[in-house]
Length: 563
Image 1 (cartoon, helix red, strand yellow):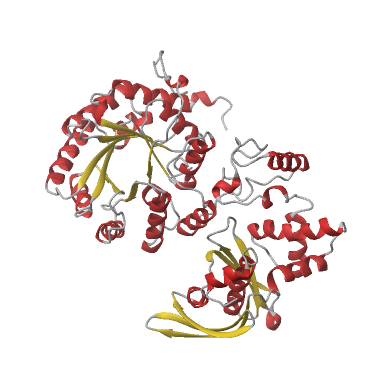
Image 2 (image 1 turned 30 degrees about the vertical axis):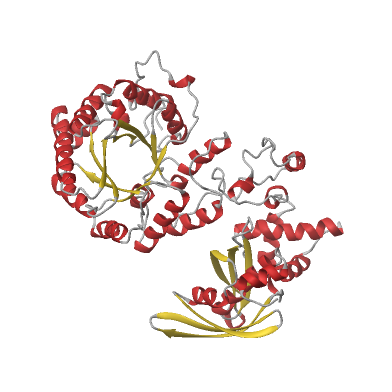
């Protein structure tokens, strides 16, 4: 690193906004949310999502409550074009979700992009071109008027093509790319020209998106830029002012919050901060920050574990264990004094009171998390020591969330006995908790077969002591077994590894399952020389543990048994 970085880097200039109003503002309602997980988020992945994962992500975003979803860049690839057509033709957006697509400001790309939306009920066509000096001078070698002409010609083309598709409720969106590095008077000049062409007004609102394509300055300067545009743009009553912060300086969340205070109506970002380079602004954190201040964010994260596992599956990226609100460790106290404060806070809290439990900014129950992992895990006497002994003595490598869960079972034993537990004691507790449970279901045997391109399974079990043979079909053995058994639980996550080597090797499978009517996921574990058998045993183990939280008759009714 340079001893004098000023010879190479310049401080970002201040905005001449001496009567700024945003510092006195308070956020009282959520912005319009736009998810770009399937576009900006997807293009940033080592391996972009396939069609199945993109559709699963889209459906989850709709379920969460997003009404605007940027679903792809259809002019960039046949894959994206086909996915947009699938959404339109399959009516996955329904009547109230707008499918958004992005295009560069080039005639042939705009035509292709608009064609991908033919027949859509509600659509946003989002066009952009770079306006910052380094792009004008270095990348495109264009003057200001040339850059402005690109924007206006694109606006004319979009308006003309849209007029030929009256069946679609169109929203037009323009972004001066790298707005954060563009002269404000020039950004205004280009935006004003575009909104004039689009005839922006109260009855015909357009989206003007002002992206921090690269985060260049402190959040307060971005807020100043947004407020300046908010106060100076023509046809402001016909504009939905949008921001698209990236996280290059690590302050995207703050930049978005200050931008909303400065006049922004809408925020674009990704779940868990996915996106190019350091990521887009994290919409989960933004929404739950509002929630922690008593504001309904308009997005439903009440089953955050399910959302996190789905996002990890779709993106193939892990969520950091210390991610705000969501990470595996964020509601965990390792310090004894912290644990004591939390315990006292929870004991004092009564339903209906204002939440003021120490170290917990929101109630974990509100996002589908349980209290047990918060106050019962310790770095020395909790999951760390337990998982270490199981791995070193029994070659059993527990997933992190199972470490947290199982440590509660061990701690219950130590609390009751007051004695130290050895590795053999921990293994005995593990077997009793996960392996040897036979009620209400015991695995007996199975056979696999293929039929009509589907995986089939015949599985024999004892349910409440009565032997049954069940049959099911699915996309694979586990899916087929789920359909056969009808266990009343949902599969969240699956892992497996081998124990030992050679002829004595066994497989261990870990299944994370959820009971839809109870907060907090549970694990099941299966061990067998055959990995498929181990998986089936793990599934049944998880269901048996879920059943233990319900009355016998209720669970029997849910899973098809007689009880």
